[in-house]
Amino acid sequence: MMILRKQRREELEEAGFTLVEMVVGIIVLGIIAVMALPFFARAYTIMSLNNSVTSATASAHEIVEQMRADPTCGNIESIVNASDVYQDSRGIYYRMDIQLPDGCYDGEAVDYTITAERLPDATLLLENEGTLYVPPIDGQFQLTPATP
Image (cartoon, rainbow, N blue to C red; front, side):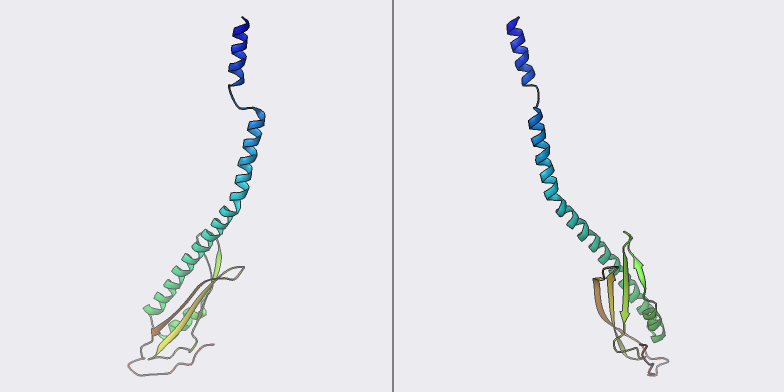
């Protein structure tokens, strides 16, 4: 009988972890989690910024396609004046700004600059420069004053 009790006691002692072992394990896991937290926060920030850049690039491409669809100074200047604030798929706002540094003249190449800034921190997402040819009106070269 005594041997059975002793054998039973040994089986119970080897059946699981002690409280001290459990506490140490939880503390180690907590320390690892605290060390990994900045990594995940940075990854989320980068993912968010990449998403905003992708959205801004798509918007810039759409704007350029609108200018190419009707390459007249009137259309280009209306698109430039309509540049506004957009929102990406994650709800982050960004501002698109279109500049015509040399103005728009019929029958000439028009240089444009498109920039996109994330709001409210004004992080530069995109800066794109390009040139678009504006054909002359009725085959004649006419100058149209630049819009400031």
